[in-house]
Length: 95
Image (cartoon, rainbow, N blue to C red):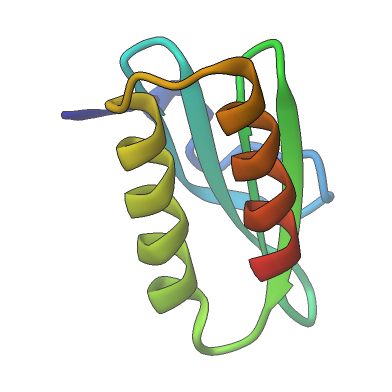
């Protein structure tokens, strides 16, 4: 279950937009959605390993859901170090 980090909603995010969603999964990864002046920014990461930002338009909710789903699947899967590297490479290439 993703936990909402409600304290950050309405605050300024890392891309200088307004945070409209901020969620964490199993204290291992996080995804934040910001509304910026001309686009949406989705910043996500796996703690201690990866941070990535995606810029999008009106399709932001679809992309947010896809990123969230892939991160959750990754966290819930036992992986080797090589598997993790491949995931990060494929994930950042896809998004």
